Amino acid sequence: MRYAVLSDVHANLEALRAVLADANGQVDGVVCLGDVVGYGADPAACVETIGARVEALVAGNHDHAVAGRLPLAWFNAQARAALEWTLTRLSDDHRAWLAGRPLVTSIAEATLVHASPRNPDEWEYLMSPDDGWDAFAAFDTRVCFVGHSHRPAVWSLGSSGPDFDASPSDVTFVSGRRYIVNVGSVGQPRDGDPRAAYAVWDADARAVTLRRVPYDVESARRKIYAAGLPRRLADRLTIAT
Image 1 (cartoon, one colour):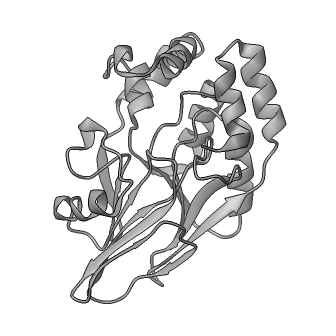
Image 2 (cartoon, helix red, strand yellow):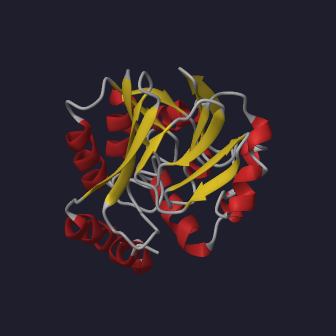
Image 3 (cartoon, helix red, strand yellow):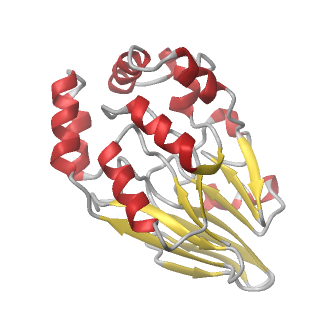
């Protein structure tokens, strides 16, 4: 089985459609690591698109917020403004569906979680090498896929010692090693590359390819401006930080 592993769509429909088009024909299924909504201008369409495609989905902090499970005061001013606007665009069914997503699930030999497998409801960022090493004890599968930081990265741990790659492309699982893979962000990358990010995971070959996909950034930006959302959320799509 081959899966497209998506995270942090953030209501960016243009990026989501581009990623799904890129994955078409390459994968047998789609899984998502959360934050379907927040920041972008197409929350309802993204919820419906993800809901129709994914085999597994865990909740992100923005999803929990619009579902009433995380206070809006937890977020910074720009994220909070986007969430308040998002609440006016989602139906009760959309919010109930998001509220029903688990924080952690598994598929094949992978754990799926939005932030960290260690205390997933505390929304810790895995950024530095040490962040990742501390999280390995919290899952027991071969690999754990995460998002949340919007930055692709790979940690691995085994008898030959730890390894960290801040700019990954292809990863082949080595016997005796375990992995944490951050697949980056579909809808709001923050690693200096504005293209949408996702991963193709070949569960049989035990390999992951981190992919980047160009999309119509200007259309996504114009929608954010037109919605009256904070301009920073539109500008961030091009500067990718």
